[in-house]
Length: 160
Image: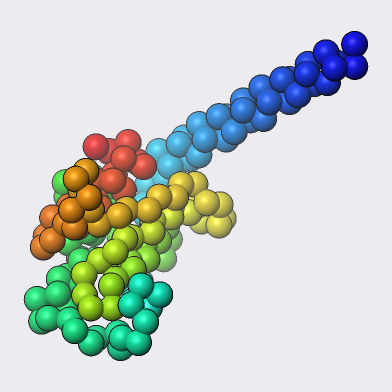
């Protein structure tokens, strides 16, 4: 009898918590859809763990540095123009934030980009990591990575 009662309690709590998390995710999607302007914030850092001993600029070509510098502008443009995400760089009244942190290899190129959608009260609405590899596990080069990252981020908005 105890065992049946315990199993019933565990099953009920599992259903309760699953429903709560589903409702929470649905509520967050609703909040994301209601936010009319998103502040675009970008930062990057070098992954020193992957290649110890490298300086942040060591071994990088001019093309890699140029691509890394252009990445946030290309990503912003894709989000705004191609996916119609209401993103801005300079609106202090924005209702939400898109925080991006790009992690680069010490010798150049992107490893991944962490993305967080946060409302103006600091509530984390969504989070994802965009790896710089395609479905065949091949590194994406050139202007293709900003487009790939923008497409993944647009999925968080339902803008694809």
